[in-house]
Length: 181
Image 1 (cartoon, rainbow, N blue to C red):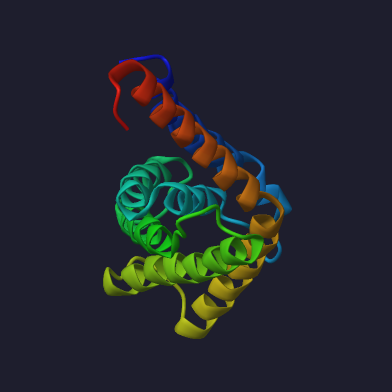
Image 2 (tube, rainbow, N blue to C red; image 1 turned 180 degrees about the vertical axis):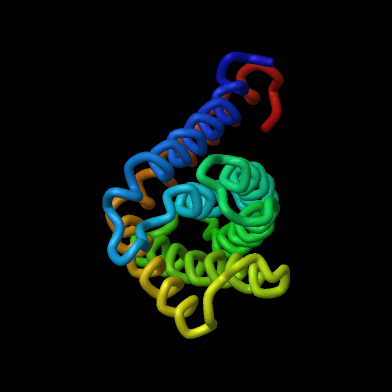
């Protein structure tokens, strides 16, 4: 394995861990009525847009497990893993062949945010995991979507382009070393 081939997993791992640390330490201080942006979800969306549905699902599942197990977790483990796995798949299916436009990125973030938060909330209802009433859940989901869209409009395009560059470098290195892509 060449040095460049090892960059992608390392960068993805660091990106997910950094998002999780910020999500649990900084975001609680920047919330509106207890709801703020979901940084880990946005990283999963960026990975899905950059690499496709297969990688988006794998990264989503791993990131979701980390969210499920990270303190101050107060829900049944596996709910975020399921939600972010599905988000990674959906974002990967939206993935255009070229670099996604700003509008595509923001719309994908909005759709994935709504889908992921709704799936998390519905899994809580099914598992009777002390979730609130449905109208209150809808308010929380919609406030989360707004927060995610604002942050996605500012950062998600840059993250996605950076991830695509890393992938492009890996392919060039594979061609240089092994003679194939």
